[in-house]
Length: 242
Image (cartoon, rainbow, N blue to C red; front, side):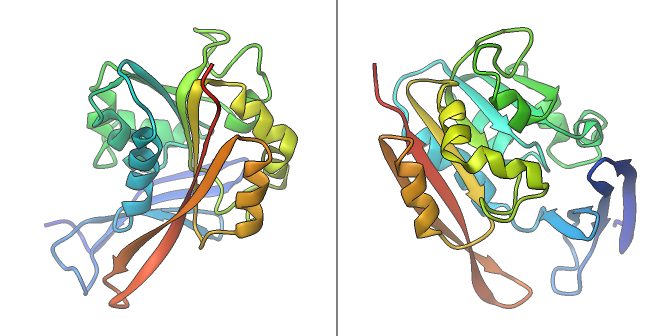
């Protein structure tokens, strides 16, 4: 049995102190819970990942055909990436993560899904700034494949489109920024965005001014601490077929 509380890693980053910890709770005594904290902000928990799973499932569910090439922005605890790899149509998965430490967690097996990602030959983990790379519509996200486009781009970095981790990220959610990410998609490609809130009608409408089709879907899951339901949002958008 694991210790009641254990700090697995601590790193100073440009965004603040990054902490990975593992603990047990009174409510679920036999389950190891992995949590990530950045500065004063609680980022993620392995106890709640239904919406991260659904980010991949809902996004890829809009696509037809095989040999899908997928990009994930934000690695976190790996749930979106692993869910994408569970789709047998995916032939390649590129994950762009800003913090080296998060990539190292997976490579060293400090987090439960690390070995799954590290051991899958379809998966490539890249250290980089997703938002900066998105602006480079001619070069693309991966220097090894300049100009590569994707069938789906799945993004889970900021809390919400209006509650960002760093103020510079707000540019991405403008018409220009969303237009740039659309340029990285293949014809018929899908952009999916995770948000830690209920759907924002104004942002859904804004997304629809950039993409021909856009929709927000509420993802509801149980919270064992409160015995109540919680909800996050997956925004979906798709470009036209050629």
